[in-house]
Structure formats: C-alpha cells, structure tokens
Image (cartoon, rainbow, N blue to C red; front, side, top):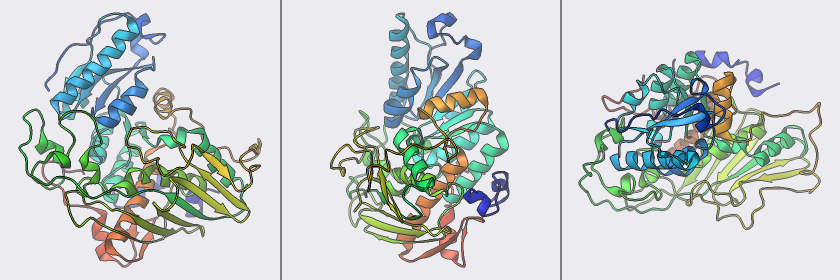
Length: 460
C-alpha cells in the first residue's frame, strides 16, 4: 500500500486539499523532414526554451538538442545577450547536424509572447527559482506541456497552485529531478522498498550549505537586461551583479544565494536528494510530520541563505531523516539489517555542483556488498524506469502517460525542503500536517507558507 493510500488520499484527491485550488529575430527555416531524422514536422515536438542561462545551456538545451523527435524553435530570456547566445547555440547545433546553414530559432524578450505562439507545443523552464511556479502555471493554461527545473516553487502556497493547475489542465509537466532517471538512485530505492536492509529506520541526506559573500555595491542595471521583470513577484531592490547573474559568461549566479529568490542549498540540491530519499521511503505524496534544525545565517555580505546546518524530521511511518553537510553528498538509508548509500559519484551537471565532499567516485555502496548485487525479482516492487529525464518527458508528451517526476512529487519534495528552512529560521520544532498542508496551531509558521507578491507579477 502506498503512502497516499495509507493517508487516505488519492491522487485525484490532492486537487481538493491544501492551500487552494526581444523582439522576434529570424524566421523558422523550411527544411525537409529527412534533415532532422525520421520525424516529419507534423509529428515533431516544437520546443520553446524559457531561460537561457547556465542550467539551460549546460543541461536542458544540451540534452534536448540531440533528440530527433523534438526541435527547439524559440529561446526566451530577459537578458538580450543571453537570447542571442541561446539562439546561436541552437542554430549552430542544427547547422552542424545537417551540414547546412541554419537560422531557424526565434528569440523572445517576454515569455508571454512565446506562450502565445501556436506552433510551440511544449516549453522548458530554466529560470531562477522565483519564476518557476508562475511560468509553469501560465504555460499549462496556455496549453503547453512543460519541463520545469526544480525546485517546483518559491513557496508552498505557490507549489499547491502549480500542482492543481497542472492536474486541472491535463498537460504533461516533468520536474527536472533527473536523479530519478539515474540507474543507481532507482535501484537503491527498489532495494530499500524490497526490504534488503530490513525495516527502514532512518535516512541521512548529505547536503552542503552556501558561503557568505557577495558585493552589495549598488550598480546600474545594463540596458540589455529587464531587471524590473526579472525581480518578478519579489520586492523591488537595487541591482547589483552579485544579486543576479554575471553580465558576461555563465558562472554560478548570485541569486542562488539570496533568500529573496530561494532558500539556498536546502531547496537547490535538497529538491534532488529529498525527492530521492522519499522514493526509497515510499513517502513521495506526503511529507514529514515534525521538523526542527539549526543553521548559521551569514552576518555580512549580500548573500543570506543558510550556511552550515543540520535539519531533522520525523515521518508518520516512523522513519527519521537528517539533512546536513556533515554527511557525504548523497543519501544513506539505514535499516534493521544494514545500510545502502547512493550518490551521483563524481558526476557534475554544472561545474559548480558540490560533489567535492565525496572521497571517491562510488555511486552505490552497502554494509554488505551482496545487498547491492542482489536482483529484484519479478514479483517484487519495480519502480518507474527512465533512461534520461528529458527523453522521458518527450515520450510522455507523445503517449500522454505520467512522467517519472510529476508535479505533485516535485511539489512534495520542494515543500519538505521549505519546511526544513522554516524550522531553521524559526529555531524551533514545527508540526506539519501533510494532508491539509498547514502547521498545527502555529500562525507564525503558517504565515511563511506564502509571501506577499509584487504587482503585476501575481500568481493565482
């Protein structure tokens, strides 16, 4: 029986709980179907990429470009230089692939204009965290399927609006939790759920903090960057490059370390690791019931997300979770008969991924080597298998089947991360009800489920 069934909630029931329901540049080139492989234009998925920064270039666009069944035809960003760089990246790829000059990618300065295009079937959202839910909701309401970078939302309230909107729309939304498409994470979860380490008792999640720093000196926003819209729903604050992203190049952006736009590593990599932990714990559609923790917040500089920390949580099934940078980066499941550790090894999605904590490239280990050598039998639990996250999304757009990382799973993983952050901010234990998605008898904590939104960037 699943955790959802144990709590008496069906997937449909999630809709009834919780907090409530640059101008165009270039023209698509006309090319024969054979140029892009076996998929005729009428059967190819036309993609628009919203956000053309570091994660888009190095991960999302890079992994989608090789698939013949999809074609990127539009790139959008609030930074005009990044629009042009993104167009060049895609045009050059297709030119190299076909051996012919190609200039078929259109650039947009406003994602609303991209969503209005009827020839775009689906969008990839690779923006800063505070824009995820808003663009995701607007996209599914515009009839687009969506690949949405994690974390799902800036707040728990927004995550609930997003999940409800996706489920009401019937569109396919894949959360970019690509660890679910990595063999060792699925296999580790299968081993745990099939009792290879006995009864699961506790889980350790290794996750570092972020450093203090960032130059606070006010600067003039460059004329090629729409800083006003970039701030979106969040309060207006002056521009400085360490609050946003580099004006040149694609190094790690400063917004990742500003609480105005996210919660730092607890939601950054935490959305990956806690999602993978939930997979093994069979708690993907619920959350903890008690959370507490402590951290060090910076006392200087611009960046103000958590530093070194340790957060704790208890779940209704009796499992205890600890999250801290004191552990190796990865997830360690402890049972009554042994343990299993799983990680990405030394794999990096971007150059700044925090994998240095690992002493070696081991991606899967156990207290008894025979545990990770065992075979999952035909009558045992077999979890959803995907070879690659973006490919699975494209497959599901065609089949209309649920993707490996559906929106509700992403929302629950993100919610758990945000609850950990709230407990560290408030410096006390919080009691969470995952059915109604509210804290018990705690008005102060419940006030943190949402944030005031700046007009006109309001999600409803």
